[in-house]
Amino acid sequence: MTAEQKKSWEIRLEDLTLGYEDKVVLNKINASIPGGKISVILGSSGGGKSTLLRHLVGLRRPMSGKIILDKYDMFAMPDKEFRALRRRMGMLFQDGALLGSMNLADNVALPLREHTSLPEEVIREVVLYNLDLVGLAQAADYYPNELSGGMRKRAGLARAMVAAPPILLCDEPTSGLDPINSGQMDALLLNLKEQNPDMTIVVVSHDIESLFTIADHVMILHGGGIAFNGTLEELKNTQDQFLKRFLDRETIYEESRKEEHRSLRPETQEEVRNALDKWLGRN
Ligand SMILES: Nc1ncnc2c1ncn2[C@@H]1O[C@H](COP(=O)(O)OP(=O)(O)OP(=O)(O)O)[C@@H](O)[C@H]1O
Ligand SMILES: [Mg+2]
Image 1: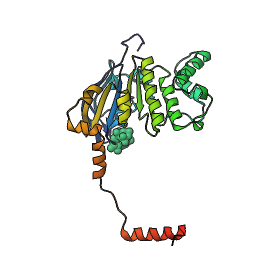
Image 2 (image 1 turned 45 degrees about the vertical axis):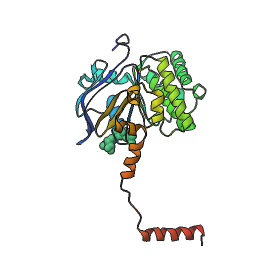
Image 3 (image 1 turned 135 degrees about the horizontal axis):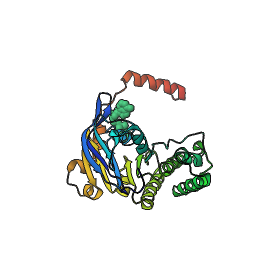
Image 4 (image 1 turned 180 degrees about the horizontal axis):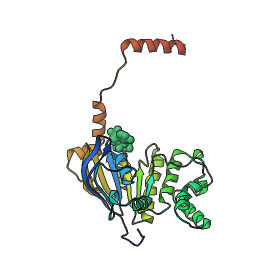
């Protein structure tokens, strides 16, 4: 696997069935995720987005079918090559997944120290370049517990990118962030894309606003299959009622409204109210 091979890596899913033990989450899906673009994977909660990402990064094996990265049939490779392929993928985990015992610079340097014999001063330069790219050059000596949630995510992104992977996978990069931090994360991903035009970036998200900001390509998972796979433009112009409602968040809202919720017995409500009144000195 050398750098001069084809520049951007396409991802192909062929008759792919994914799940856990005897539970199928995605059933016989077929799709391509284009190389060198930002693709956003959407879907209702529990629809299998993280599950798909875990398989793309090689943490789990599919029940059946193939994942083809560039020209590599991921799960049909000898172990050694499979491990080498996995190293070619950067993954931003939901909370950044930084090691608490190391400062940011060492966290970001980790992949380079583990997998290369680059001299320290080169590593330092690459680390500071990447921290600067995510706006954290000043925080190189901070430990993860000294950072805000948004800073941790950005640091996780710097680490995922440090080995310049052809494929970068991000699980919910804006979840748990306020609108300003979310906007910064979107801007960062766009900036990153500009700096690395060949990089294939796959972002799992709940965030419809972020979708419209960053996506070239969109995949929507629903009911164990793929409800849409195409460009953002195609999605915007869709006449499909389900997709339109999905984009308006109506589907998600209606589905939550349909859920049956447990209710408190009236005598319990009464008892709790009395106890709280007593505790709070009401009456
Ligand atoms: N480790 C696991 N073992 C068994 N089942 C799992 C496991 N992880 C996820 N699942 C199940 O797989 C299904 C898909 O979960 P997944 O986490 O992929 O959904 P998601 O689309 O990422 O949802 P969310 O938007 O809430 O993050 C769910 O029904 C979930 O219960
Ligand atoms: Mg998830």
